[in-house]
Length: 282
Image (cartoon, rainbow, N blue to C red; front, side):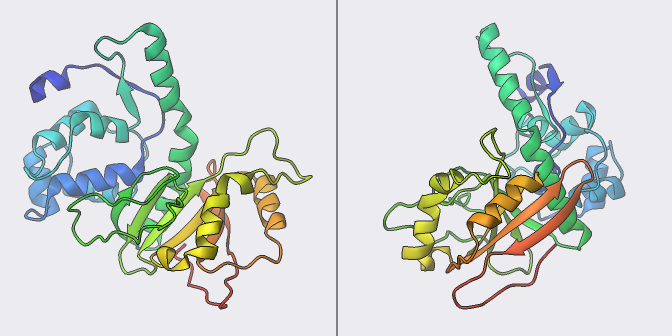
C-alpha cells in the first residue's frame, strides 16, 4: 500500500489528542537537520509558530487530516513515522480495518475510547511541564514489566534489569531535559467501585511486585522517579492512608490531577529511608 493509499482510509475521532505524543512525533518528523521554519515550509500547511506551539503542548483542537498528511509526507527520511501513528496521536482510529468483523470493530473503537482518561491525565502532566519550560526528550509506553527504551533512541539509556524479573508499573515514561532521575515514570490509577473512603487496600496486591523490587533491588530503580497519578480525591487519600508511616528506598510520588480544569491539585513524594527528596518539576 502506497502512502497516498493510506491517506484515503477514513478515520473517526474517539478521544482528545495526545499532546505529548503529537509533540514527539512532530519533533521526529522535523528531524535534526532542519529548523522549524524549514520544516513548516516543506509541509506548507502550518506556520513555524503554529508547529512550535504544538510541540510545546499548546493545542486546543485536533489537527486536520490535511496537516497530518503534510507532516507524514515531509517527515525526515530517518523518522519511523506512519500516518496511522499520527492519526492515533491525534485521537483518531480507522473507521474500518481490513477483514474486521462488526464485533471486532466495536471492541477496537471502545478500547480506544477508554484511553480518554489516560490521555487527559497525561495532557495535564505534560501541559504543566511545558508551562514550566521543560522540554520532553522522549516518551515511552509500557505495562507492568521492564522499562524497555526504544532501540537507537538518541541520548537514552536502558534501566538496570531486575534479577528476579520484578516489574515496574506504568502507562508512560518521560525523559525530561536536565532532570534527575533520568526517567519520570507514570502509573495512572483509575479506581473501581471497590475504592471508598473506608479504605480499599487491594491496589497493594497489584503493585506488590514493584514495592518488593524497591525493597530487594533498589539499585535497579535508581534512574526512575515513579509517580502514581489519581483523578479522584477519595482514592488519593486512601493511597496515603495505606502508606502512612511507610518509607521507601527509591524516588516515588503521588499526583492528584483535575482533568476538567487541566490542573495538578496536589503532589507529594513518599518519604525515603535516607531522607532524600528532589525538587518538584511541576
